[in-house]
Amino acid sequence: MPRHAAVHVDLDAVAHNVAVLKDLVAPAELCVVVKADGYGHGSEDVAAVAVAAGADRLAVALVEEGQELRDVGIDAPVLVLSQPPPDAMVDAFAAGLNPTVDTAEGIAAAAAAAGGTPWPVQLKVDTGMHRVGCDPADAVDLARAVLDAGLELQGTFTHLAVADEPDRPETDEQLELFAAVLAELAAAGIDPGLRHAANSAAALVHPAARLDLVRVGIATYGVPPSADLELPVPLEPAMNVRAEVSRVRSVAAGEGVSYGLRHRFRSPARLAVVPLGYADGVPRRLGELGADVLIGGVRRPMRGVVTMDQLVVEVTDGPEVAVGDEVVLIGRQGDEEITTGEWAEMLGTISYEIVCGFGPRLPRRHLTRISHGAGFVDGWADRPAGPEPDPSGGGGS
Image (cartoon, rainbow, N blue to C red; front, side, top):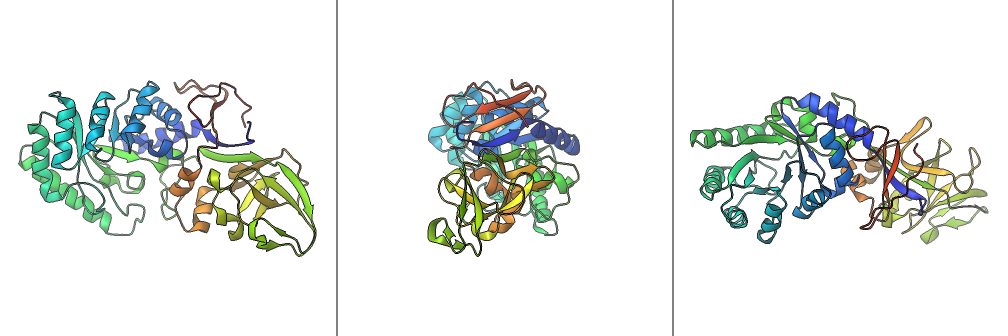
C-alpha cells in the first residue's frame, strides 16, 4: 500500500446485500445503481459482483460510466438514468446502453443514433421530484413518439423525492400520480414496459413502490438511506477507510496544532499524524467537530482542522501508538465502529455524500473470500487510482 491509506471494499458484503435485497423485492427485478464509481466503491468491481450475486440490471448516470462497464466485459443491461445529451446518444447506442428519454428532442436524437434499429429506451416521468422527467400530461404523446420513431419502449419510470422519510405523504401521492400515468398509457394501447419507481428507501420500506423493478443504490453498499428507516433486512457496510500512522510526536502544554492553531493543548500531549486529508475526501471540519478515528481498537479524537494531505489525532491516553499502526476512519476495529452515518450527522449531510467523497488519490482495495465471477478470490485485489491496475496484492483483514 504505497500511500499507506486506502478505501477497502468488502465485495462479500456487496454480494450479501444484493442477495437479501433481491429476495426482499421479488418478484420485481433488481437494478443495482453503480453511478459515481459505484458510490465511491469502484463501479467495475461492484457491478461484476452484483451481477454474479443476482442483479438483473445495472444503472449509471452518464454514458461514459456505462462505456466503462462495457470496456471491462460487463454485458448486463445498463440503464442511463437521465436523458443523455444528443451528441452522446451515438456512444450510448454503440455501447448497447438503454438511455432514458423525456423530451421530443431526446427521442429524435435516440432514433437518429439507432438508425432504424428498435433500440430499447425508457421514458422518465416527473411526478414531483421536479428535476428531470417529462410532465405527466405529456407522457402518452412521448411514449407514442418513442414507438413512432421505431424505438422500443423498454420501461417507464419515475423517482421518489422523500421515500427515506417514511411518515411523509408525498411518496403515496407520487405513486398515485404515476399509477394514473400508467393507466393513461394502457388506455392509449401503449405497453409501458418495465414500470419502476422505487429507489433504495422505497424498495426497503414501501412495498407498493416495487412494481416490476427497483433501483437500489446506497443499500447495495450496506448504508441505510436514512437514520429514520427501520430496515427489514440486514445490510452489511462494504466500505472501510484505513490508513497507517506516519509519525508520532509530543507537544508541550499551550502548543497548538494544524492550520490556524485552533486547538491548543492544556497539558502535554502525544499526537499521531495520519496521511489523509480533505483532498482525499476527509472533510476539513471533522477535527473541529469532535470526530474520532480508531487506533488499537480505541477511539482517538482528531485535533485541529484536517489539512489537504494529513490529519492529526491525539493519542495521549490509551494504549501506546507507534508509526505503522492501523488507523480506521470508517469501519470497524475491535469492538468499536465508525460509520458514514456518524460523519454525516456531524456534518449535517447524508451518507451518500460521505461515501462518494473519497477521492481518486485513494486506491480501492477489494476483498473477497469467495469467487463472485469478478476474478477476486481469497484476498485483496488492488484497484489504484489511474488507468492501469496494480497487479500486486496485499494482506486481507
